[in-house]
Length: 279
Image 1: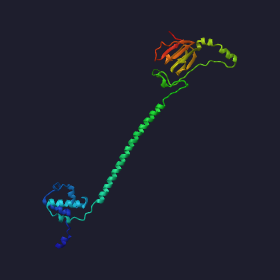
Image 2: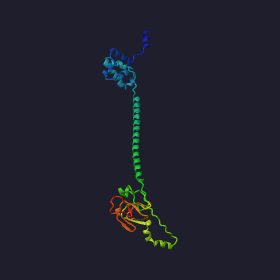
Image 3: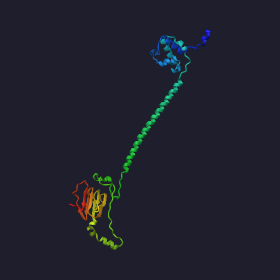
Image 4: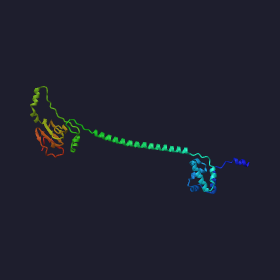
């Protein structure tokens, strides 16, 4: 019966044997771990027969020898209890591949995010440049007559007063064209119309570019805009004429055939006066 009981009892494992010897010496896991320069977790796995978690068989055997040497027990007898050990090489390899794949995925996400930020910066720069270019192109420069100046050619003092477009209104004389006799009668009466206050004439010769605005005696604006150098402008209408000139010193003026002197007006400033001149 005793022999049968001995056969039925399970054989003591390596971990159980090591733990039993350690407890007999009264040494704790923490004390033994400090003496062997190992972690408590490694010793627990060794005593729990979790050899596959400790690495290759060479490492496990080294842990066992150090364990036995510290407790002064026969290491050879303990090594005989070590089962056939399967090294977790495949598992380590899979873990390494998994970590590398995860690292590559993180790098790819970081690279995509960097590209997105770079694209946003470039897109914003292009949009800003395009918007500024459109603003420069879309600046209104409206001209009615080919001899008018653009607003950029006007001096700073005149830019405030001179709008971009120009309109010249000249009243047309009702001259009948039904017969040659009537046309001859109209042509033969220039002196009479010149003396008529309702048909007074102002002639301006522009030696340089200048801005001008003229209102007749009825308050109608009959000239307005920028005139280029060499332009001769003639306007007629009821007097008095209210005149505003940008560069009066570069404009020769005659009213009803008489030269008008504008030298007493300040240079580089708008000249405002009425024709005929009032003292």
